[in-house]
Length: 190
Length: 190
DNA sequence: TAGGTTACAATGCGAATGCATTGTAACTCT
DNA sequence: AGAGTTACAATGCATTCGCATTGTAACCTA
Image 1 (tube, rainbow over the protein chains, first blue to last red):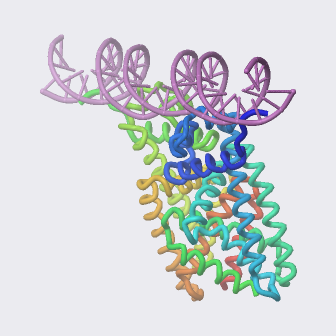
Image 2 (cartoon, protein in one colour):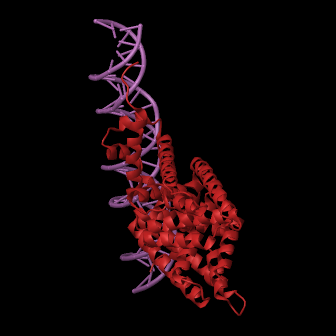
Image 3 (cartoon, rainbow over the protein chains, first blue to last red):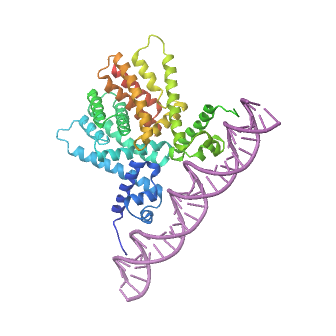
């Protein structure tokens, strides 16, 4: 066995560079060269770690959802006992709102991919599975909270959160306003 | 004065071709050549009617919002007297949901531009003005309907509608479900 | 220490892009 | 009828793209 590096770590570094290009210049500016430049490495290195552009982009999407999922799990674990189901819903949804720089970056990456889903089958399929998972979790919590029509409420909350995220990123209002709207809606579900 | 054509009409035709490219292949596939090919004309002609790509794209956005606005006005005018303000809200918001092929195309164009706003100042500014207009209209109607916290409710409805649109376009659920969610939420405002 | 594998760097290539330039009909007005 | 303007079409150019190829150093194993 010859010279070895930590593949996962290198790929993560490149993906962070990709995210930066994506959030500053948009998905159409994401190219092998741009990512390499942003990461301060050669284009050959990027090629070494990703078979092609599509794999790189899908890995960037996967890394992002993984990261958000981790933060959701952490936030849930930090909740004081006893945990109300609607509190879980609130905490989970708040992780997807652009409330700080980290979440703002993630939200923008997610929003960009979501907007691209209608014209990209692979992205659509991936996001569909993620949506199904999120919907199932919300459904479970809303049932436990005795909310009327929990399936519809779950769809509503997911759509509302995404809409608030998009509007915040577009500069239509402040993050705090988005948070207030979400809290209002959750209060009304009681 | 020499040879004359209807500039507005030609531009509209080209913009429809642009929309088709946009909805099928995404905004990054929109190029002078692609639009020309889709419209069945030469690239020189496209250049003749638009100074550059940016102007063409902004005109496409403007045409779309204009068209949606026209449909909203028509739908409002077709409402039977006496008109309830919440009914107006419903009719207006329904014009932005992808409930039929026409609205689906418009919704996808709108969603694509909205997702691009965070990295494009010109688009952001344009959409901000459009959002402000929509919010002001909803605010007026919600006040007339004696809804609690009308400003917040307006922001909620706009975000929810956009979220439902995005999720429908991404294939997360059916158009009918999106409509049902919106109707539920409007009923709860009474 | 020799051989083989890994980790890049560098370069080349065909395709596509936005835009500028040039050419040429067609039409209007004087 | 001539002149001038408009409406395109065609082409060229520099740049960027994804990807393939090639080269080379570093490193591990036998």
